[in-house]
Length: 365
Image 1 (cartoon, helix red, strand yellow):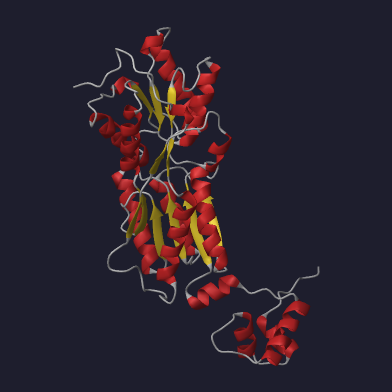
Image 2: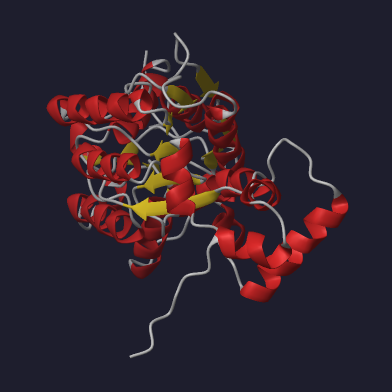
C-alpha cells in the first residue's frame, strides 16, 4: 500500500539549495530579512513541493498558535453573529485563524471550550454572551480562564464584568431604563415585558433597567405582566401568546406597550400579534433591544435600543490582540483588567407611535 509522506521544511530547503534556517525565515516571515534571490528560490520550492506549514509543531515550538477561540451562545442569533463578524475582520487582518463554537448559555459549556483552547495552545479566547446566576459554575469557568492566561493565552469577555478579564460591557440596564422613560413619554402606561430566560443576567439587567425607568415616572410594572422564555423568535412568539391569553377577550386588559428584551424575541412577538389579528402600534406598541441588522426588513419598523454590535466585536479582538502582541508565554494579562462600557441608544420607530391621550391614561402621582 502506497504511503503518503508529508513534505517537510527540510525538503523545501534541499530543493531550494538553502539552509533549513533560511527556509524557515522565509516561510515563517521572521524578523531577519532574507535576500530576494534566496526568498524566490524558497518560495518556488514551496510551490513545487506543495509544502504547508505544520501549525501544530509551530505552536509547540513557540508556545502559541495563530488560533483565536470564540464562543457564542447562539450563532443563529444576529446579536452574536454581528459581534463575531467584527472580531473576525480584525483577526483576518492579522492572519489569525478564528475557531468558533456555539454552546449552550452555561458557564460549564464555556469552561469546556476554554479547556479545549488551552490544549490547542490558542493565542486567545473571546467569550461572547451573558453570565448566569450559577456562581459555582462561574467560579469554575474563572479558574479555567486563569489556567489559560497563565499558559500565555489572553481572554476577553463581551458581557458582564464578572470573569476578571478585559471586558466589553454593554450597558444593558441603562439602555432599557432610557427606553422605558421614552415609552412613558410617548403616552404608554400599561406595560408587559417578554423577559428572556430566568437566571440569564443580560435578560435580568434589561428587565431591571426597564422597571427602573418606569418607576422614575411612577408607572408600575405588574409582575404578572413579566413573561419569561427563550432568547429566540419562538420564545418571543410563545411569551407574547401568554400575554394575550392573560388578557383574554378583554381588550382593555391588554398592555399599551410590550418590551421584548431582544429584537429576536420582538420579531416573534410581532408574528404572534399578527396571528391574533392585532395591529402594531394601533392595538399594542412593541419595542426590542439590540438593533440587529435584520430589522431593516421588519414592518412596522421596530423601536429598539441600538448597540454597535460589529464594533463591539472589533473592540474585543483589539483588546485581546493588543495585549498578546509581544507578550509571549507566561506574560498573562495586565494587573488590572480593562472594562470598556458600551452605551445603548434609544431608536424610536413606528412600532411605538405616540399613544393618543385619554382620561384613563394619565401618569400616576
